[in-house]
Image (cartoon, rainbow, N blue to C red; front, side, top):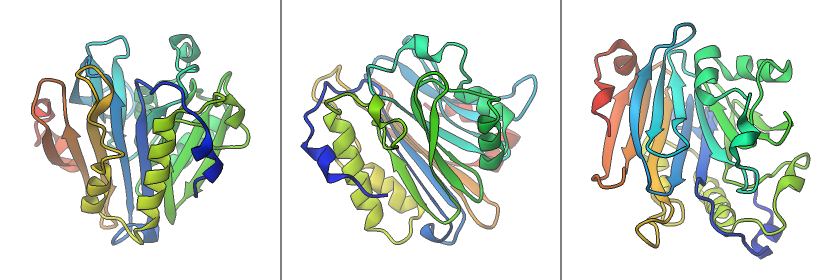
Length: 280
């Protein structure tokens, strides 16, 4: 995936409050094989995040990066007991309205329902679930996929690979849905897209440490120009190793709290051996 240079010539609209940067790698693009998936989560510092082990009445257990304190509470990234990981990024601000998500399937439901990328995509094509306007990257232990969602159930699977990389910020890339972009695409989304393209292109393979280092690039890790402006509040990385071991690395930068990093073996989190309630 390469950036279209004409994007960089477009003037911007005001920054998105809920902008995020997503990327994933699989197969030969990951050191030692397997998959890796990452989300830098950006938002106004008007709420708190925590990590939760959710045990639904039916379906798979999952770990949730959960937010409370503003009107957009809920799961912002997650991984279930079968290894399916879902990270999301918001569509352009003019589409990111509650009414567009009414009656749609949320991230938490997807994590409880599907065990693999293949299963989730087959269900999507058979219209067993729908999303409001947003961007999703999914990963399991062998493959990764990026899906763009528009209005009224429109969607485009723009990448699905078991050997390669994929990434996204907050504007549409597909021919099918790019008309939903505003006339003036958000500057931050364009800059972050160009930077993640550059950084991933410079790496033949990724490992956990390199992905974390990429996430802290000054273009991607946003510090906020004022006390209330958008900044990066967390960085979520799940690494599925070829030997079956899986790890969550989570950086939490909750408002008013020190930035803290956590390295969590997923087997320990799902068994209760690791106390996820301590993650703040």
